[in-house]
Image (cartoon, rainbow, N blue to C red; front, side, top):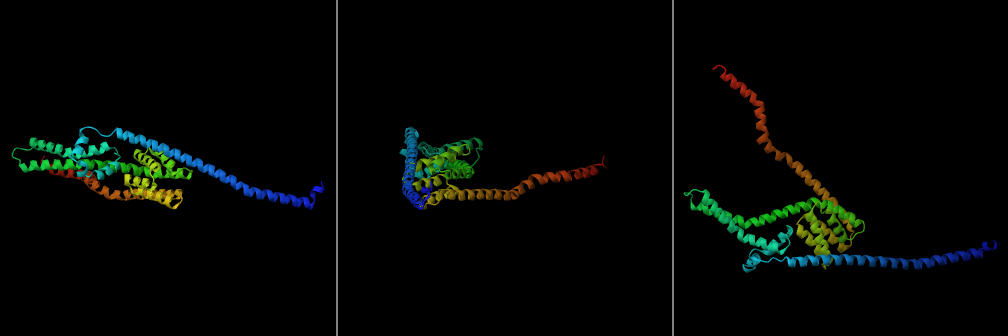
Length: 324
C-alpha cells in the first residue's frame, strides 16, 4: 500500500488523468457536433414534411378552384362585353380578396352586378315614380328618379364590398392582440414561424374566423413561395391594417438581419396593447361631447316639465278659479 503512494505513482496518475481529459476534450465535441447535425437534419426533415403538407393542401384547394370555375351565362356575358377591362377587374379583385371573397366566381358576380343592377334599379325607380307621382308631375322629376336609380345601382356593389372589408378588418383588429401574444408564446417555445402561425390560426378561429383564414393562407404561402418576404407582404395587403403591416415588416426584418423574432414580437404585442388602450381612452374622452345633444334634446325638456309642470298647473287653476 505504501508502495502505491510514492511520488512516481502520483505523477503517473496525474499524467494519466491529464491525458484522459485531453482525449475527452478532443473527442467529445465531435460527438456533440454529430448530435447537433442529427438534430438539424431532423428539424429540416420536419420542415420539409410541413411544407409538403401545405403544398398538398394548396394543390387540393387549387384543384377545387378549377372545378368551381364559374360556368354559365354570367361568365360568358362578362367575357363578351370585356367587363374585366372596363370595370378595372384587378382593382376590385384585390378588394374582394380583402373582403374574403377569393374565388373567380365572386369577381364574375360582382362585375355582372355592376352591369345589371343600374338597369334594374333604374326601371324600378321609374315604375315607382310613375305609380306614386301625380300625372301633373314634371317629366324632369321622373328622369331624376331614374338617374338616381342608375347611379345607386352602379355604386351599390362597391359599397357592399367596402362594408364587408370594414367588418372583416374590425374582426381581425379585435383578435390581433391575442394572436400576437399566442404567436409570441409559440415562437419562444421553439416553434418555427410556420408552425406557430398554424397553431395560432387553429386557436384564434373561435374569436376571428377572418384572422384564422389569413394566417393559414400565410402559412401556405411560406411553404411554397420562393421569397418569404412576399408571403408577409401579401398578409399585410390582404388585411389592409397598419398593425398587421407593422408585424409583417418586423418579421421580414427579423429574417433578413437575423434579429431575435421573439423580441420583435414582444415589442409589437406591447405596442398593440398600448394602442388599444389609447383607443379606448380616446373613445371614453369623446363620450361626454356625444352625450350633450341627446341630453339637450331628450333629458332637459323632461326635467323642465317635471319642475315647471306643477307651477304651470297651479297658475292655470288660479286663472280659472274666479270664473267658476
